[in-house]
Length: 136
Image 1 (cartoon, rainbow, N blue to C red):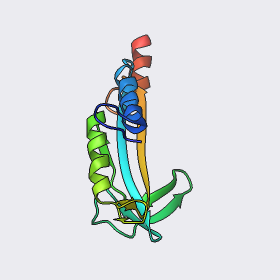
Image 2: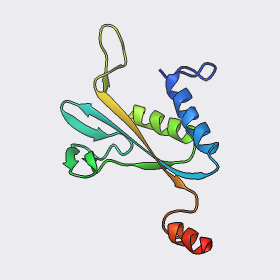
Image 3: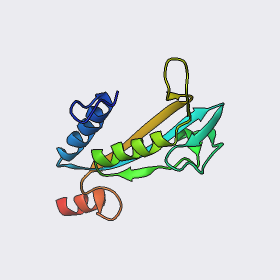
């Protein structure tokens, strides 16, 4: 899935595509956040901050399902995202099996959240009120 330096796999290609698309958008500003967790022996662990163990899933009526206390990092490049994935992978629970010496003993979930808004809208820029005033 990750491939090699010479032949990147689907994960680094998809992440690079996200950043290529974001950087090609001249009329929008973006905020990208990532989190990385594993489920091992029915416990949720934060792979970006391994001191956070036994996290819990909650559901909020408006914002939906979330993991309370899970670390979210703001990211600005594909290289930074891949570095976080590599760091998180070092914290995964692994063990040997007959077929694989470094078999993962858990399920992992990597999440990237992409927020965007039109440039000139939102807090601090005047947004719609400034646009309406300029139109008068």
